[in-house]
Length: 419
Ligand code: PLP
Image 1: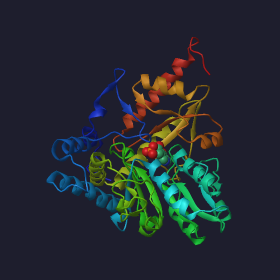
Image 2: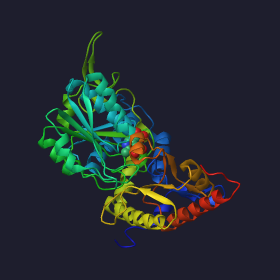
Image 3: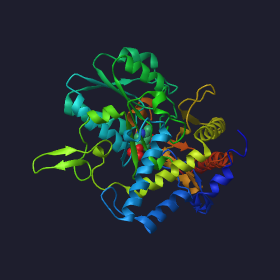
Image 4: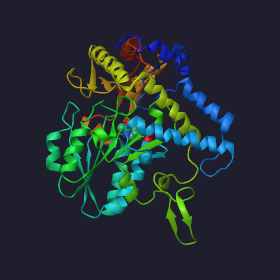
């Protein structure tokens, strides 16, 4: 990759927030797995929409409504291209990954699952890809089974064939762990699941923002992710699902927009994907999400992945030099992984570590990362997590490591009690 192709300095210039100070120190933002910062192009798109063509969509006959509808629907087309989906009819806008998975669980699951059926998940799922299936299992009498994880943070794929039974109707798995950074081989998993007649839903909240994702290549039946984790605004999620599957599903929410006709006691449904978008959607944020897609495409998803790979390798190397620091997740150079790095410092609570890092201007996440079963599997209550994105630099990793040393120095003072 040439220096010109990936110019971090130039990228950083597009993100106003990266130039602010926190506790009188330059901000080092390493909480990208939670949400990412927004470039000025995305912020400008919001301002532009509200200043120039704010209107409700699909139903208006005036110029503003037509402009807003065209811009909103253009982002649906754009999202389909971004994912290499065969058609924009497969793209449903939701509020976030969580809502996308709930939509699928509810609209597909209630129509197609019965008592005794099985949903196969993994031990490393975010609560968003766990709780909706628990609710569905409770409502239908289906059961949940889990692909276990080896200590290095990789799924035990050899178990997949044993766990896939004729009762398995769906495999729902994350493409990239938000805690461990593990990238799961979802294409191979999908192939094996399909061989056994199960559908596959991918939680792509951490993968679509960070690496090229081609839904046709993966072959999955459904895939969910959030705009806010990929430079876009909060309040926009995407559910991709095969057209035939969307056709076979009942609506998720009822109301305006999702109908063709309404009688007093019954209704008929709009075509897909609008059948799943009841009420006024998040027009402004969807339009601005389109700018985020344009931004990422201009840099190139492969280039972004390569940049993050290099930074993550450097971060792991530097963190391993710190005495008393344990990293959770794959650390071998041979294992391709994403840029979320979870760790703990011996004798210190992750919240205390996070608080002192914040005082040093370094924003990380500390907690269970909405993955409590995974925390239990790792034998911890919580971890610190640093996660990188396209605008992070090696110097920022150095700042993180310096700040970790400051944490250790702070808590080694006799006056500051350790946990
Ligand atoms: N799945 C994974 C792997 C995540 O990392 C997250 C968010 O952290 C989610 C699902 C939920 O995303 P959202 O809160 O945008 O619905």
